[in-house]
Image (tube, rainbow, N blue to C red; front, side):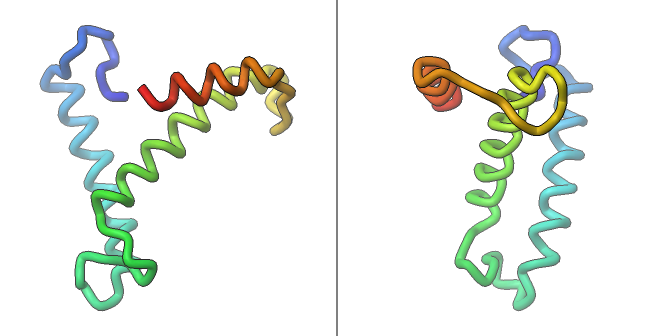
Length: 90
């Protein structure tokens, strides 16, 4: 997600972007962690929260690729949907 140049590693600038993203996610997570237990009221830890945010971003990116007219609706064949789901799991 942060390997902008596709090198398979992240350089310093990419790491800074990652760090800022995590800091923003942490700030959002902390707003819902009212008792400061490290878990939200749903029992979700910060690690799971980050995984959920990454999954949501990846799904949103896939959706945007298909939503060419940007109206918020797409049509996929069953095969396209399965292919995208499998690619998301990589």
